[in-house]
Image (cartoon, rainbow, N blue to C red; front, side, top):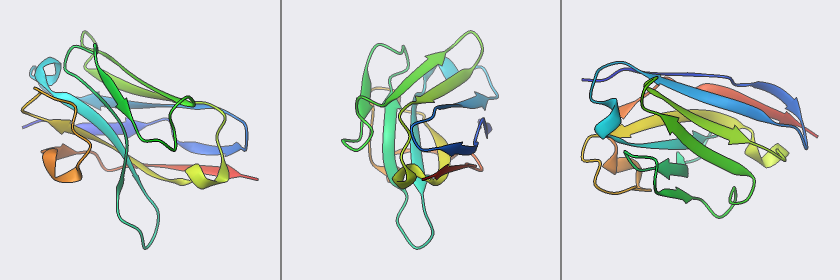
Length: 125
């Protein structure tokens, strides 16, 4: 079992930046693939980015590619999402997730085993 806690959300103007963090409990963090998802009211939770257990491979949704960067520090059991050039359309609750398999960097919600509680990101125009 692993517990995930997101932080770093808030209110920012369009064009601004935020960095989200996801702190994980447990010693198995370094073997898990990790991902970020986001959700707005009335919509499905959608994939944002994912990173392999080593950090050597990453994947991004088309809508955030070139603006967001996912990274991780296995010594600190923490994953990050650096969000630049934010747009009002990025407003959502952002969730981090862990995949126990770790052998790939999945983009499907059902491939992830553990989820955090989410952090709100609001981008004003």
